Image (cartoon, rainbow, N blue to C red; front, side, top):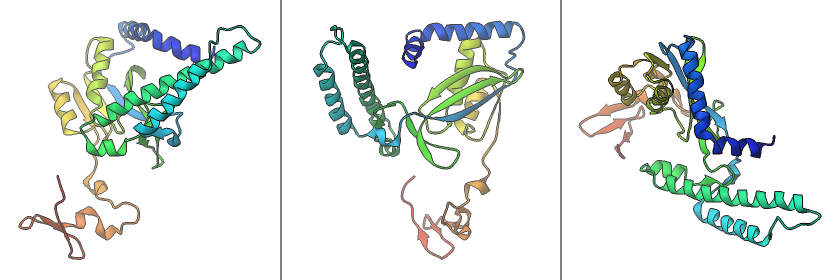
Length: 264
């Protein structure tokens, strides 16, 4: 079985596979193997197959799409009999898949341009023509790469996965409510307790979990760690060393220079 057949099967039967997953979880829950007393949730960045060089701006994507469509039109009918019929069919399929990916890339571009965050529009102003849904994300080694953010919820009783989803968000902020809603759809109820790391611990998440009566155990980022200087910055100039002066609404740096307000 090649990857085309497997991918097509999963796409065409996604609803049935989701229902099968929910039924399996139901059987495990009925046998006491899933309790939802405590759920551990985390996200992990999975690198995409796309190269960073595959990211293009809208004008380039449209140009490549027109070329791809022209190539498909010039290939003729792959059903015609001939000595190279099998090769022609493979080439025709590859050309059509490229057209589909480029069309999807333009759709993703519209989503990026429609985001309310100007910073995100500037940062993600390009889309991959080979993996349109991938986004640049920070990796554990400190670098960035085209990736997908996979969110996984695991029941702590027997380490069984009870929810999984993929998001384009470059960080985990705001991902917990949606993840727990998926757990509820799969098992009919929310967990009693959920454990997360500091990436999920925001004010909105804390309030949301309280309203949903889910006990939240989450790490918090220490203020001292937040103020650590980046590479090339002398420790004497960490954020905590800047003194705020309310009368002028400025910060005073250790060398006595003023840092004025630029925005909120």
